[in-house]
Amino acid sequence: METIPLTILIVLFAVYLGIFLARSTPTLLPENLCSSDEDCEWKITNCCPENAGARWECVNKKTFVPPKCPELIICPQVISPKPARACVCENGECVVK
Image (cartoon, rainbow, N blue to C red; front, side, top):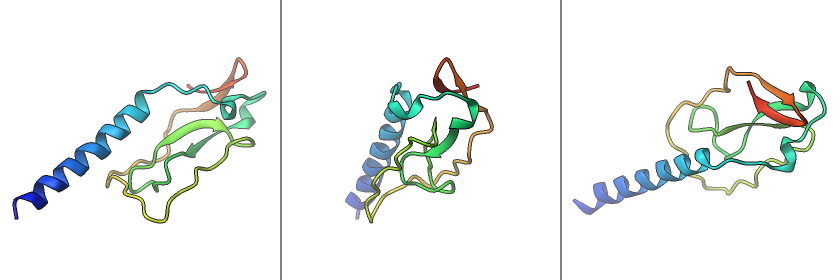
């Protein structure tokens, strides 16, 4: 009985650690390049919905390639609404203002 709660805690810790590492790693990807503000848009990049841990990134909506999502995915049960900050084109790159 005690191993089940411990296993759940380990899995939750691993999920949150992965989210932290993913958010702290800077990305300069081709889908961030732009020529105007209309090119840039917030997109979900981790296959999780807004009501369960979505990871939002400011990217070029024309060149963005959605991730290939597995059938079974574990998403943290945290509401992650679309960010209120502006996603704009600055110096040829989609950035958050």
